[in-house]
Length: 214
Image (cartoon, rainbow, N blue to C red; front, side, top):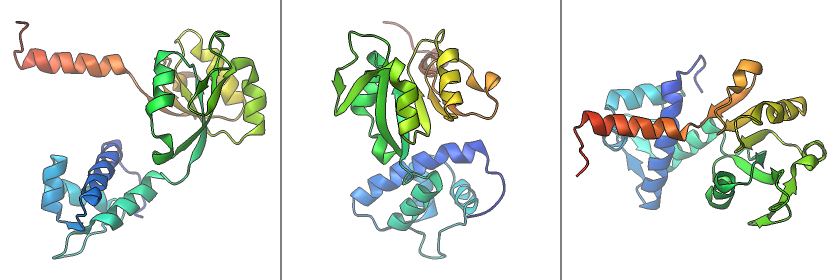
């Protein structure tokens, strides 16, 4: 793998490469040119080569890229085989939907615990995982090697919950709360998810395109 700092724009394209390569592999396509991969990715062939050269290239002159090999390389770059142990905090509508439908094991994570402070749902199961009382969080994390927390809780309770997790040694977060974690914990690794931001971006694009209500 090439050394040096990789730009975030390149990193954000890697999951798209992986997704499209997985689709190609499912179609029994063994190899692909940079031009064809660029067409699928909606970027230029030069951009594809630049992106992949950040990590070593992987292509061959006159052959292109081996689809299974390139998929495996990107899988390794993304760390999808690490299977980091994760807990999900907040089993409301959003948390329950994520726990029920996300294929965490294919995305580098192993969901091993779900927690909530609502006694009407604690004790219920999502799949084969029981929703535990939030009071059990410390003991559970101490007994299990938890690396990351998925936060599906209200913003007003997030600071205290993150502090608890951080003090337990958990410094990586998939954050749906709109709480700015790195403002209080600069060394935390955070992926913020703002669904409303994406919807407003969609609204902007429709407005710019002149879409009207009929």
